[in-house]
Image 1 (cartoon, each protein chain N blue to C red):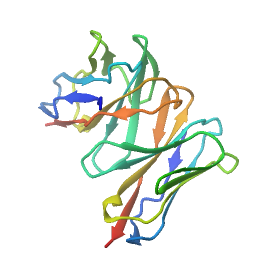
Image 2: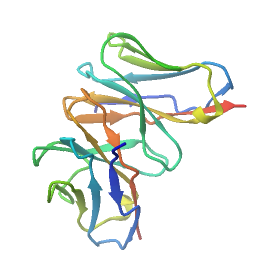
Image 3: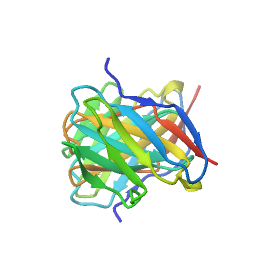
Image 4: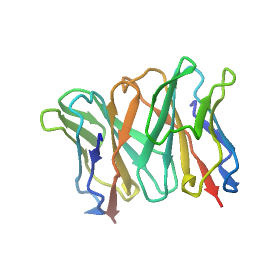
Length: 115
Length: 110
């Protein structure tokens, strides 16, 4: 069964450094998402992406964040100048269609630890 | 601020009982509703989606939607210890944005 993959599974970085989190969505999916989940808190929407552009973003997704689909398979989240409060689990998801008309499939997540 | 509200629990039920999980949402325009299960340290896993008022059944799970009351529920029949997890309610805001509740922790006692 096809699945969303994410690398690395755990990333440790120093405050102020840039990190890139990588995701490979399911191959025939068209819509891509990033979420974060701070330990013990709820899953928070960051951004949705379709046709090589951002469709929607949350208040969390400020200038520190960017997303890219650099090739036909990868979907990346870049965090510039990481802060302590960026420590969280970051989930990538993909869906064949948008807006809940179809299911989002989540990847296993990348745990980001900012020291 | 669009919100999805859930009781954090824990909700404890004996094995074999029915577990009832509830969720309310604030955006009357929400069109799509989902229940996810999340085990500790793992990613959310879809259980059910529901788009129209009424009930939708899938095996031991039944989702119920009442848009007038802005209320979604999930019933789990014949609860098993393996059902012990956090259950997340999610709704769409517009077309491309999903909002999750904080989740209800379910404990099924053997």
